[in-house]
Length: 133
Image (tube, rainbow, N blue to C red; front, top):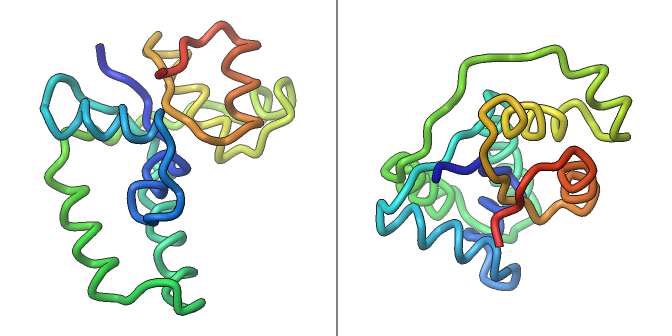
């Protein structure tokens, strides 16, 4: 079954000290092509920003970031073009509109969500979304 992949889960693949079982499971699913992930339009911007901020902090290099982005491009990740009204969903679940985009996508597609973000995790549970375990 496809699942919604958020930026926190994706970013943990990049940083060796941020391994998490949910993130590892999501990556295994994608690398074995047993299923695909779906991401909202904001995902690409979040991932790019995480990389550039960490380059500026000296935590990584531009070459390593470029290789990571290239590898992400090879995974079965579909970028969903639909941008639903997020303000109400963000208000209801006390989320940023960025995180509400992931929740909205999981709700609309009725598929599980892979997140390491505590607020998004709580909102998903509250909304009845299955979480990738």
